Amino acid sequence: MLLVVLLWSPCATSAANPWNGKVVLQGFWWNYWNNNYPNDWATYLADLAPRLRAMGIDAVWVPPTAKNQNPTGSVGYAPFDHYDLGDKFQCGSTTTRFGTKDAYLRMVAVLHANGIDVIQDVVWNHLNGAGTENNGAGGLDPSAPGSTRYKNFRYVCYTTPAGNGDAADYGARSGRFPKNWQNFHPNPDHNAEGPDDITASFFGPDICYWNGAARERRFCCAAGSEPRSNEPEEPIMVFNAPRRLKTNVPTRSKPPPLLALTASTQESVSAALPTYSPTAYI
Image (cartoon, rainbow, N blue to C red; front, side):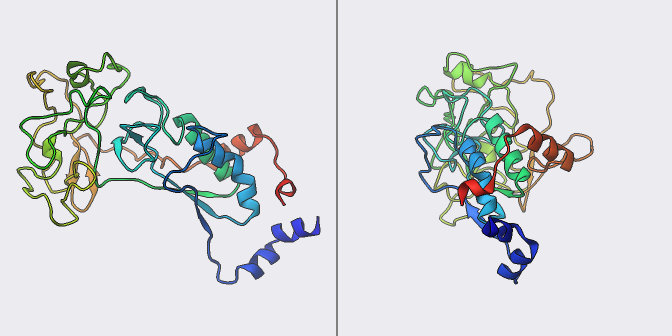
């Protein structure tokens, strides 16, 4: 019991950490997996939170959580849809290897309730897996230049859920942030693709952040179909180097960051969770 008191004492913490540093845990490895938490790594980390806090962990670095074309096979570094954190059925699955969006948000809340920050790894260099899980149907654009022509990225949403997985079904999906070959290298605004690391398509179509690269066409037709010119107006995502996003919609108040929870929210989450004792892990 004395050991536990010393571990949680401010004086003991100060003495053990005179340089006022922080301890960050890399909360995954390349092929991260736990047979007790299949495709639910988020819950595993949430369950570890009290023990990690007791060990002195200040922050946990988590892998990319966006949907990959192989949702449960990939470990996050081949992103397909940045707006799918395990809550949209596409690519043959709702969940990701990391878990569902609900499990992810709960993990963030539990870690925060235990005084642990969350560092989210993200991939904005490239995308991968254009087309449906049916052999990439709809992802190919025969007119696309470069080393790969699979650059049509379309996403499901409430109004256009996944259908039969053919090219027409894929092309009709109207989820947020669709992309065409003009959004990648090479394109008319930045006609370059390698051999440098900035424009090379080493891991999939390389996203171009050159001014104007996203202005060319908002919608690109699926192979064999016509461009959809009668679509309702949507905000056009505009990439501006260096890596800054803005839209053509009116300025509005910025929402709080995804990982930022208010103190009252954390207290509510803490009250709803089981009570953990650090002595159970020492």
